[in-house]
Image: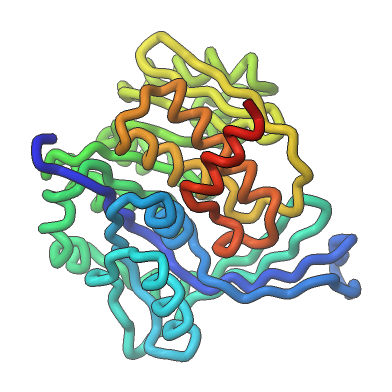
Amino acid sequence: MSGRSGVIVVGSVHTDLIASADAMPMPGSSVLGTRFTLAPGGKAGNQAAQLARLGVPTVLVSRIGSDPLGDVIATQLAATSIELTYLARSTHDPTGASTIFAVSGEYSSIIVPGAAAGLTDADLEVADPAFHASRFTLAQLELGPDLAHAALSRARASGSTTVLNASPIHDTDPDVLRQVLDVVDVLVVNRHEAAVLLHAPVADRAEADGAAVRLIEQYLLKAVVITCGSEGAVLARGDVAVEHPAWPIDVVDTVGAGDAFLGALVAAWCGGSDDRAALRFATAAGALAASGSGAFAALPNRREVNAFLQSCG
């Protein structure tokens, strides 16, 4: 790790089209909304933006279109100081979009990856210098397990610590996912995703402790983090698990809260925090994101996270 710094994030960037309302529309029906926002989104884009807002040198590897939405994304991401050398602009595929319905603190979405779906191993090869320079590499499953495997395999070969946010997981072939997990150092999942991987329910934070340790043993991982929504989160390394409860907040919506959590967790590790302190910092960032509207605009900076922690004691 000598000489390495910062994080490289590989995955999807698209436009979030977020409509907030008091009720979820049923099939064939419409409801009157209360708010609409348009902002950069996608797990990779959100995680990279959170890292950058916390002062971590961050490189993003993704694709957007050469269209007005792509221009908006590039401008807003650049304002966070993300290194965008490897954010390619497609000339034939439009920028992807996610239509999000945010209701009562929860959300549903339809994701159309667009240009990001064209991200290939050739794009990763171009970014090879960044893999060799970065301390951590983050990937997700939003663009499928094959891309995650290619990115994390390259990162593992370069000596970077590999982090997989195994989301979304529902359509992933178990054998293919096993190949991805073979090149993962740190796995970050929610309770549902942990249950899928273990083929057993994870009902609450108490069960998440044991589930995290079992995931380490089953997939030979260095560490596992399980987020438990309103119950907080668990981080296990070896056979030792630490917990942190959720912070008491008024939830506006949870869009991007998981990405804020993960970005802040890795940012804390980059700053030298131990697991317990990193988990505390990450849960605070996730809480702040959930107390704001949308994903990108609600991602907190370091001053905001530190002020929140100080106010909570």
